[in-house]
Amino acid sequence: MAETPNQWTSAIDTTRPSIARAYDVVLNGKDNFEVDRAFVAEIVKVVPEIYDVATYNRQILGRGVRFLVDQGVTQFIDLGSGLPTVENTHHVAQRANPESRVVYVDNDPMVLAHGRALLAENDRTAVVTSDLRDPKSILADKDVRRLIDLDRPVGVMLVGILHHLHDDEDPRGIVEAYMDAVPSGSYLFITHFCASSDDSREAEKKFLALLGTGRFRTVAEITGFFDGFELLEPGVVPLPLWRPDGPVPSELTVGQRLMYGGIAYKR
Ligand code: SAM
Image (cartoon, rainbow, N blue to C red; front, side, top):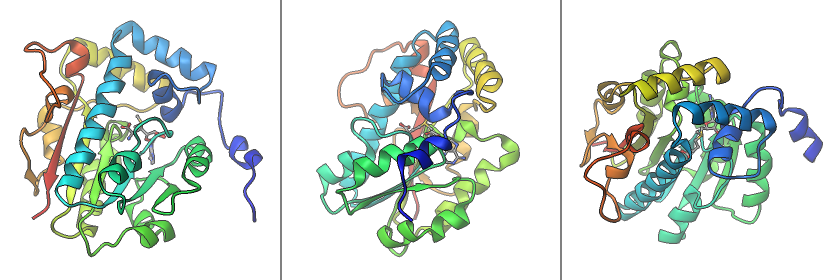
């Protein structure tokens, strides 16, 4: 059956903020509603730099994907990919190597609506609307199977998403399930909100109260997601410090330290 815009919009809840749309707000996008902007206004009260934090996250996403293509990776599973914006994973990867294939996975209905339109003319990219907490069904998905050869190295991306999973949802087990499915030579790419300051604790409280999700983890906990893999230089660090393209300030602001990230290699 043909999918119509009405099917997408009927699944969209405008009474509560959504993670994807709130992120769109801080990236200065247009795919959001008043409830999402109100949520971001609350976050700005405790982290005035939250718009910059989103930019740092998009910047490391670009640097990380470029790095992985340089290592020879041409297949990416981008879990919790967000609403399409500038410099998405497939833009960066396919610019570096036009053969690159990207599957975006997100459970927000708006991501599918916009993603489908954006990707309609790109047969090396797909959008799967699914819950990433169900690795088995995602790995069996027809678009994942069509585009991703699980016998060749894969870039598994969990960028800006694991802090939305509570401990009882077993985020470690979820990471392991994806990494077990990909062969040696694959990479794991994570960015995560870090519990490092009073500001981060306040932001975490707002996330929990208004989004119902939010678990900022310590550097040790974030590093723990990479256990069993070879954590590449410079390790798990504040986002602007991960293989920067240019000089970085010697002292980082709260916003520059609010998220950490890293990439590891599966031997
Ligand atoms: N990865 C992108 C980036 O870093 O720029 C987007 C990050 S955005 C903050 C997190 C995304 O994860 C949102 O689009 C949200 O809809 C999605 N998400 C949250 N929980 C999810 C779940 N259980 N399964 C799939 N996607 C999820």
